[in-house]
Amino acid sequence: MKYDVIVIGSGMAGMTIANKCAKKGLKTAVTDSRPYGGTCALRGCDPKKILVGAAEIIDRANKMKGIGIQGDIFINWQDLMAYKNDFVAKIPKGVEKGYEKAGVDMYHGAASFESENTVRIGKDLLEADKIVIATGARPVTLDIPGGDLPIDSTDFLNLEELPKEITFIGGGYIAMEFAHLAARGGSKVTIIHRGKTPLENFEADIVKHLVNATEELGIDLHLEWDVVAVEKTDNGHAVKAASKNGEKTIQTDLVVNAAGRVPELDDMNLEKANISYSKKGIQVNEYLQSESNPSIYAAGDAVASKGLNLTPVAVLEGHAVAANIIRGNSKTPDYTEMPSAVFTLPTLASVGMTEKQVKEIGKEYRVKDGSVSNWYNAKRINESTYAYKVLSDNEGYILGAHIIGPHAEEMINLFAMAIRGKLTVSDIRNMVYAYPSMGSDIGSMV
Image (tube, rainbow, N blue to C red; front, side, top):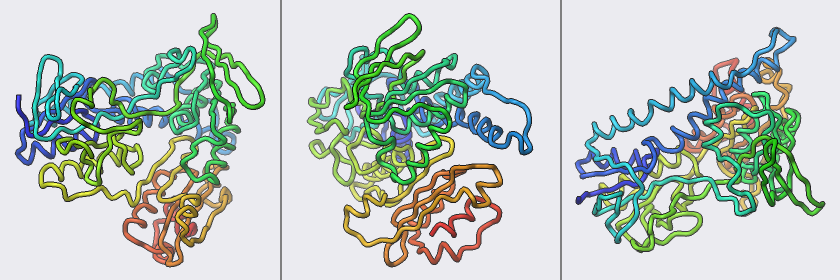
């Protein structure tokens, strides 16, 4: 079968590309080895946030207990999972209806390359002028004894019961988010991370506040420890860790591999298609076109690009790839502002550069920061963790903004718009904001 475009992967990047190309009259096919919808919608951001939503209620009620709220509430894990599963189960059919409406041919199966412009999906051999790799990412494999024993993030989001004791391997956003969720669900939680601090790519001064909040929640955070083995025991698992100070063994009911994610490019026979790639993903030019095979484009987590591994970035790259396929190479993704959030409680959010990154480029800058748990928006809900750090240049333009506190994920969008719209510190201060609202605080943060 001959197509104009074949898209491998049906997450947000692949979905964007397939639908846009088909609607422009290109004969388009899409395939996925899993149900249509991708990581974010089926086994990532969306189901996670449903579970976090329940934890937010627990957190808010606990902070207000004795000052207007009485009685105990708890998470009924089975009911919450049933609600989440009902939400997720409807997504693949909805995605398929969208493809059908756009005129996209649908295949179900893993794709592997046979040549520079042909792929095999089961018994079907498909050829196309352009082929897009949008396969996303998968959990990293733990190369240690017992590395196959921990469950991954997908498994965690499908747990039928929440164990009494859970140990997370890793200190990235998956480990931190799930740890905060599990702790508020009643589990005793341990995090083991090899780095000096969790969330190394975020602003260090703001992460310190999250570390304090994490430990105050009762989560055991073991930093600068390497997990060297996992063993099955009669009562669960034994996690063995080592550091410069010696070794330790942690007994736990369940172990979760949250050590990171890598591009999902296994068994695709990329060499047969002359596609250059590394452990970071497909090597592409500024148009997200393969550096070694001009018939190939890539988008999302499968790409070794400048974008963060975030759903909005995948969509951004999807629009760029679709435009370049339809009209020829002319569109490059603009990564100027890429807001991101870690949905712990409290939430940590960031956009733009960290202070370390600003120093590395040698740019002059000013900083305004502080812990502001005494501000009204924190005191009204009895929130003890609320802090910010904003960097701007000598002309007053925002270089980076970093917040931890209630609704930080919404506030950071305002800073992202300020960066995109080239608003200055003066512009932000002189804005009139609805009050009382979280957004009204940003005028005092610059």
